[in-house]
Image (cartoon, rainbow, N blue to C red; front, side):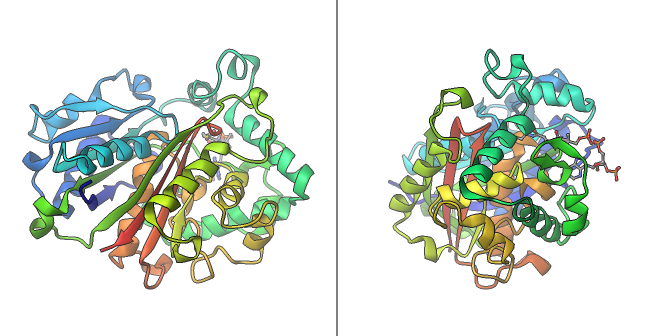
Length: 385
Ligand SMILES: CC(C)(COP(=O)(O)OP(=O)(O)OC[C@H]1O[C@@H](n2cnc3c(N)ncnc32)[C@H](O)[C@@H]1OP(=O)(O)O)[C@@H](O)C(=O)NCCC(=O)NCCS
């Protein structure tokens, strides 16, 4: 297998975009290519994620993006895997470069739904769940994850204040991230007094609806090492897994089996230990999801991640910085852009460009991106080159 490096990455500010998804995708893609030191014509394939493009009446965005980049003859494919779409696209790019089929690939994730109201956006998102059994019967993503949270609270005694600690930490981190949707810290009191959404979840347990775009350039360093402009990240593991999609078919609601297996595969591929990881971007679409990720990936024994977080172990500057970008919770979650944006944070950290959220001497980083409530998952492990 060939080595695979991330040579450059870029994103826009998440939140409400004035421009279309198509325009934003082209803008961040060009920025990522420029930052990498490559030229658009070096790209051999574009793997694009845009799960809800239909909300803008636009499918098959890849050829339009490549045309805007001046490379209309380059092939493209749309990769959809709900909230883990662009990490699935990154996996495809990795496989192509590692297998020697490509020397350079572009991964782009983009989403725009801010022109829809909350009801419409919630209905679109619910299409990523089991429509026949969950969504059609009224289940929404806040409701489904709230069910997981209730199960975790019942089994392990997880407390609202411990969920709140995740929100407080991630809003604090996002307040130092110019790309974040929310850039204002919140207090635990603000969290506890925020309105209920789907109990036990309150407003600040939930990621927001965000527009956004993110892009990543992946290369074979044997071909492109000399051109590179940024400190690259070598992809030491790229794991993709699947699992039972619908909650009603599962035997245990306190774990996401796809995360467990993706973590196991990734650590085997990378040949590193959990203790080697300097920072992680994990899938915290709801506060409970960050706690599940830390337990499923093997960083904490079951039932212990929530307390460790509340004691400050996962803050920037502490033992294991988790979601220094602010995570989905506060940086925002434009579904298809999220996986690629996690990689943007890794590259910012490896290049020492993360300002007040910088993790010092970061050498190894992990990204974890879940599709819906765990029907799919990607885990990538990166080493600073
Ligand atoms: C929580 C949620 C229901 C709130 O939506 P809403 O009630 O329509 O909220 P609004 O858009 O009217 O915003 C009301 C205020 O809350 C803020 N806000 C909205 N969502 C927020 C969130 N998730 N966290 C923090 N603040 C939020 C807004 O900025 C606004 O603040 P302002 O009054 O100071 O301007 C919505 O954000 C949601 O459903 N999030 C989950 C999305 C999801 O399921 N994603 C898929 C995950 S798998």
